Length: 561
Image 1 (spheres, rainbow, N blue to C red):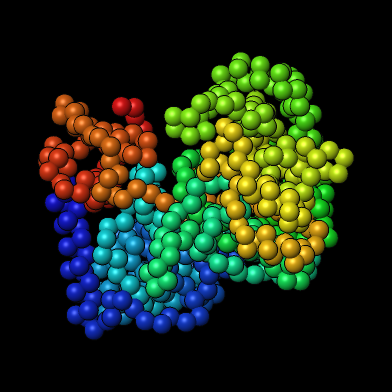
Image 2: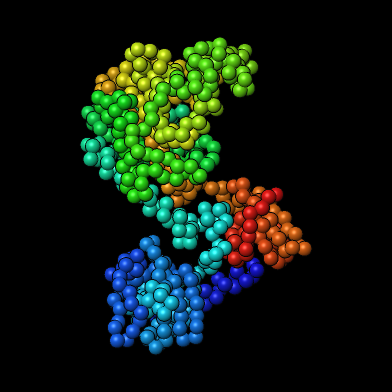
């Protein structure tokens, strides 16, 4: 089969040479005035008749199916809007065009002119009267039925995934619509979109482990940003009263269903607002995104549903803690007892070899909240008034300095938004930057001193509300997608050469079992032993599996190791 895959590629290259020999450029040229296929399919269509020709159309796209019947050739043409059948007859094309038609493969790009109608079976079809070759695909495309079911293959070949997996293309369009709606909504409210630096001298604005890099010309170490917050708040000092940024953020942390090291954040700041005004803005923004998708305000999420009809529920952190943990969050004895029952760590070493100290009370409170409360939040629900020591960038409540004016928006246990009444007291800010809670690692703490930011605050930052929304999670929720990798066009993956964890071959059943580092295990069926031997000998096993197993079109099924 490995040789067969190689042969397929060689046959395609031979066809490319034959197209060139006809005097045509196999890499195509400009092709103007092509109609989106979805628009073609909306035209009135009657059965083909020489007496009553149908509408004249022009379309371009990729061949995703083909079937030959002697002097009649049926193709299926795909573009990002739809698919349509093509009917090519030898007597309706020039001699050269018919020769080109015999050299077409799955994946080739062509342009066609013709008449739109329906066949005797009622299939909407373009009867082709002009064929323009646009680009040759030298790599074999996956078979439509079996080629794109393997998640590992889809992620590594997103360009094919978009063509052959309708849900992937749908999500890509919906993401664009959601982001465009966010911009339009904020612009209409008078916000100004800005761009701030990606390289920072201090990894501030969030509790996360940064990626590090080095600037050769300046000979300084830098961090790739983990948040957008601090530069935007400097702009508040500069008089930009409503600012936002939609930007990429990078955190050198784990990968999971809800986490990717590179992701998109919306952060915005509004002078003279607070966290209540941010709740209203968040609710309006998310409802606008839901409405933009046109699927109604009650949408599916897995086997559940989410009702985004406003107003969203609002509940205090303290009342939810008491409801689900069973004690008052301020009762240190009861909180420690609950933490002990949950087998949480109660003491830590502040430094290697140093005497152990008790984990800070608020750290235990937050760990209990994460373990016992968050998964029970159906939502959408605004959870507000957090323990102040966990929020060094947040203003304290005037009635209770132990509580910070902060909220998070949860839906089915997933955090979607995080907002504050922003701290603008430079002395308090300097103090909280210096405070490291016992039991909280440096990576989990926002206690990172930024003297320049404190200096900016001393020049006077207006009272303000600030909001952060993870765009990828928002798109997950609104498109009913269970993993973040399916809403990011190119998620981070291991190098392909190390993508395979282990494999085995059962000669009696010709079954090749492969476990991928992503966690998936698949049985490939009716695989010749020569392919297994080739895999054992291949220096780059990931590349070998891609070329000789996945692209070869073997049927497969999910398995267990």
